[in-house]
Length: 308
Ligand SMILES: Cc1ncc(C[n+]2csc(CCOP(=O)(O)OP(=O)(O)O)c2C)c(N)n1
Ligand SMILES: [Mg+2]
Image 1 (spheres, rainbow, N blue to C red):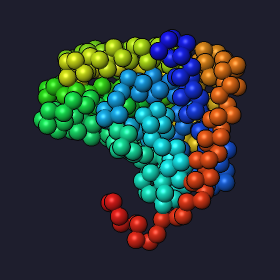
Image 2: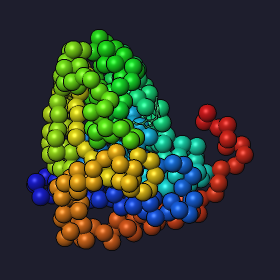
Image 3: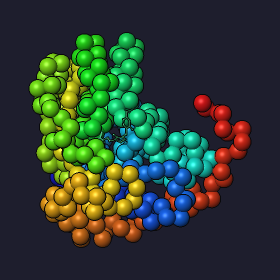
């Protein structure tokens, strides 16, 4: 694809995710959304850029801030809204909600609200896949807060020792709930990852989906070629509060200027012409998806224990 076409395609996908989440914000006060929501607004380029390099049968293990990865990997939108509404036609029949999204057909293998827990699921699945001599690769995404969990360190050690084909993908927004990384971490990530013998890469421009796509391809190709773990950290910025549809600058733990600097670089906010040109088509898709969710029945009593 020509570079302009790539830019437009990735812009479209990122904007679609942002508008989906803006629709969630609009619906939230009505109580139609049946679970807390951790929005990815500001972080879309990471999911879109990385997933552009993945095949349908590559498996991704996400976390509670997972809307962007679910959509970027191809999870269906009508079933997404039905899922958030706790409906029977939801992708997990209403049992998963926003925080535990899954869509195995598209390789979204599950999420968890427990910080860092899906990293171990991904490493375990990657080991089985290696034993079965499959060709797929694995991605596990997590925030900078997950780096402080014991399970994260055990997973790096195990993955390196057993040489499993996995990309450890850190979405570094500097924040874990209301605390900044500077107050939480005594280690240098690159050195730490290096001490496990795992190659470390970093992308600073996490707002630039084209750059993320190009540079993350290097890490993803490295996993495919070496069939060993690789670590990629991508700097990003969460525009909204930790959980919920609002902004929380009054809480005093972060600087609005930092977010504003990032917003000045954000193509979704800067390229107004392209934004306008895609708006109608995306909103139409979203309206139909919301309608699907609204019209879906609630689960039946017997659904409670199915698939458990
Ligand atoms: C094991 C565990 N400890 C604490 C929490 C509470 N908690 C939920 S999200 C979160 C912050 C995680 O931050 P990060 O990993 O950077 O992800 P982000 O929310 O920034 O995307 C914490 C501490 C939890 N869910 N699980
Ligand atoms: Mg974080």
